[in-house]
Length: 164
Image 1 (cartoon, one colour):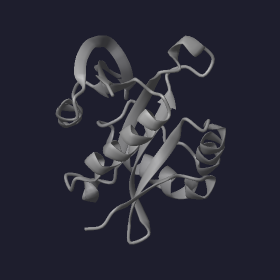
Image 2: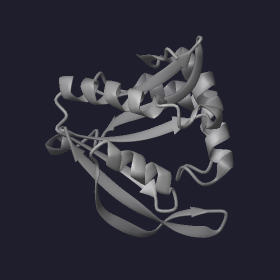
Image 3: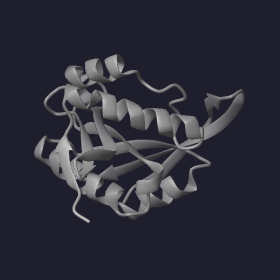
């Protein structure tokens, strides 16, 4: 299986928005409860600095997942070495190694762009994601109580970090 990884452009907004719709509808893998519209996604991609990006995984010219890399803070320069990520894969493409390929590409990009540390927040009930990030070298640093509220149900969020 040959998966191509590349940085998203605003032209990818429709496909990325579609993945948001699927993942948000599952109600268990992300703290994002409402998917971003094509317009919102396009504007977001356009707003990213050169040091940030959405990296898409393509198989046979179809986007099957993506990983976001954002600055921890766009306005506080003392955090310019810290990024935050999120990984989103279509259900039928999970457990095929795509997340690892995306992470490897993103970490290479992050190192080349002077990031020292990456942080990720994961819903506590998403044990597979926690294990995935641990396999990449992330360490659990704490837990935020009642951080997520979806469908009137609170859930804690685990935060993790990895030094590059």
